[in-house]
Length: 221
Ligand SMILES: C[S@@+](CC[C@H](N)C(=O)[O-])C[C@H]1O[C@@H](n2cnc3c(N)ncnc32)[C@H](O)[C@@H]1O
Image 1 (cartoon, rainbow, N blue to C red):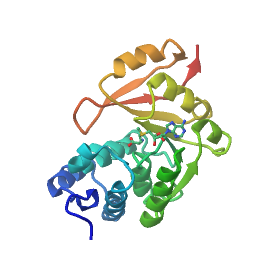
Image 2 (cartoon, rainbow, N blue to C red):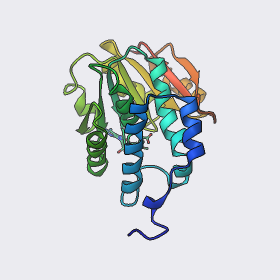
Image 3 (tube, rainbow, N blue to C red):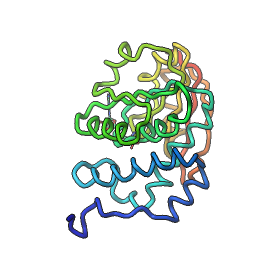
């Protein structure tokens, strides 16, 4: 039995989950998959730091809704790539929702073996349509070769670097959706030194000072 202070004993806050599902509603089937994912995340959090411990009480609003909100910005996208998936945000959450969409799937790219192992287990227990790549992003550009509709990333790198990562897929027709914090304007200013972009900015539905940067085209300056 885990000691009382063991992170695996952190309970999910029902009001937080309720608030998250009000913000970003999902089907019963997706909710059941997300419940299995959250249980696994809390179990693994004890041995691998997957999310900042301070965010655990607000796991559903802070991480799950934050991830789910991307779906409404690419409602027709079936083929996704999530770069630097870490503990599975937004990648595993999207996979859980995409299980409802015939033919949809997501590639999860992560270079740390322990995290990739967690991602594989999350995909297994949720039976969600995801493929985990234990690899550096640069090495997956050729490996993930089919048509991709949407490239995502959260908390991975400054915007100008993210744009460089996503550029090969966006050049082949994908849209990029990056979850960003309050410094988005400064990051955009920096990014436009290197890239010709027409960003669309969406305020995060989960409150705080978050933004989603949407890019439909990327050209090197
Ligand atoms: C700060 S974490 C964010 C994880 C997750 N996206 C989230 O929002 O919770 C960044 C993750 O990206 C991974 N990462 C960073 N650079 C990478 C690269 N070049 N190729 C693959 N993974 C990378 C790191 O190992 C780490 O797990």
